[in-house]
Image (tube, rainbow, N blue to C red; front, top):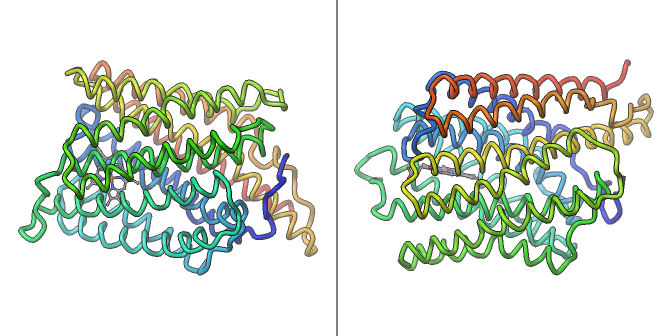
Length: 426
Ligand code: HEM
């Protein structure tokens, strides 16, 4: 494994990322339960609040937990700056989990109280996460595309969080906080900042580290990587400024479209090319997640074009499904299956130096067969969801929910086994 240029001695205690990673299977199972219960009604239009509830099970509970949990080790290790107030991190994870749950309940059942609770908890979580992480990133000595990508990503998260909270208040339907007149534009910028500035920007920045480290695959050179970081974040940030200045919708749409091309068009091609040229040739189950993600991305772009240009009704749900379950979730699962064993092994080695027993090698912490099993389940869930959306089929939608629930259980078991194996026999 190639760890050149990383400050591994600066990594935070293991309980910090694990507090966030524990949320991921819980929310996968919650999303599966919702879909199995509500069926295809959740997959016909993005405008239905229960669909928005399912969307935030993914964006906050699953993807958010993975991204926030990874930022705590990434910032010190890659950027060389310690994140202050680490003792608070488990409380931040709790606020994220509870806030996301309350938002989901509020949107699903139209409950103003749950929406207000969710908004308050998420605002708290955002401040407690963005404050220390943003402070560390601002002072980081390291330069380069990865650090730039992380900085722009947290800026986008701050902006999209503000817009999301305003929209959540609008859903309470109270006189003090009516839904804003420019709701569609606000939503467009919120989604653009979320999918491309935050998720896409971070994925590109982290891939630049993970690919060489775990697969000995050379990422793009510094100029291309810097261009990519800017192409993911600047257009949606400009759209956020334009929103405040009252720019017309087509301008905002054009800006978000530019970032979509970077995230769904350019970045996946670079990943596939890097993987095809990787030095370590042995087949690895986690690689398959990266390939599925890179294949889903251009399909999501096509669905986005169809949504903007045609009246094909499934275009919106297809875009959401391909982007969240196909592109982002596949990548997050692939990365987790490499990062979790690495963190467990690395922390075990540090403790072995302090007198604890030897740590098993990474490949014996999260077994190849378990990663491959999760990939099959994930692929079946993805395809079943695509079929449910295109055929508007209730039975397939509920089956997709069942598979998603199973994926949550499978991931929980693998994570638990990896932690137990890392502790060793004694
Ligand atoms: C920080 C906390 C967040 C809050 C409070 C929040 C709130 C909301 C609300 C209330 C809506 C519905 C808007 C409407 O009805 O017009 C919405 C839509 C949406 N949000 Fe968020 N959001 C948050 C974070 C995120 C993140 C991190 C992402 C993506 C990474 C995201 C992606 C989306 C998407 C894709 C939609 C459209 C859903 C659909 O069309 O069904 N949100 N958000």
